[in-house]
Image (tube, rainbow, N blue to C red; front, side, top):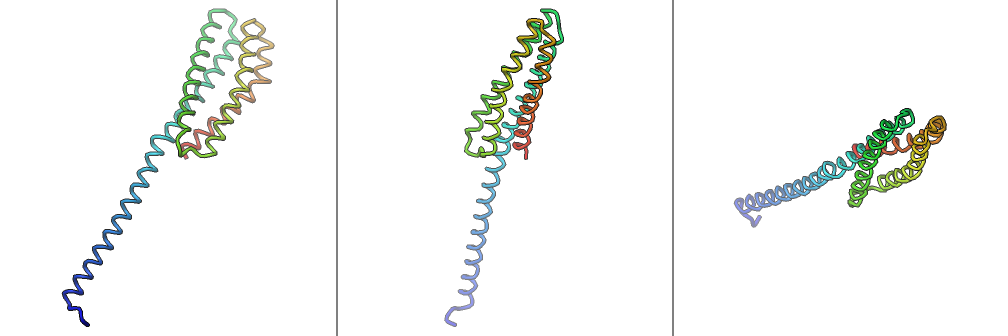
Length: 173
């Protein structure tokens, strides 16, 4: 062999250092991918789940206030519940707008977009029904308001809540 022992050892050591550098580079690359994934979970998905939960809470508050408006017979009590309902809807709308912005993120999946579209569709269907109940209750037509609430609002409102729960679950999974 034309290579001396010291030269062979030097080349072997250099090859070992080169392999070590390649493994370290690959490890750093994978760590940066994991970091990006964790940031997406922490800053994007968790925020989207928080907004979905906030919207769900607002729907529950609207449902409670609607029921109370139907049950309460004095004007002052009804006015107080209508104010609570107005504030809950405002919180919902703010969260909805923030979620719309959050879903502009490139990591938003088609499933998330489809669920959000379904949620908006359910809102567009259910809010007018709630408004119908409120209009009847404010005219003191409570028996009709109760009937509309039970027959027309309960189902779509439950679907709306369920869709928001599905979105929150998707964001935390």
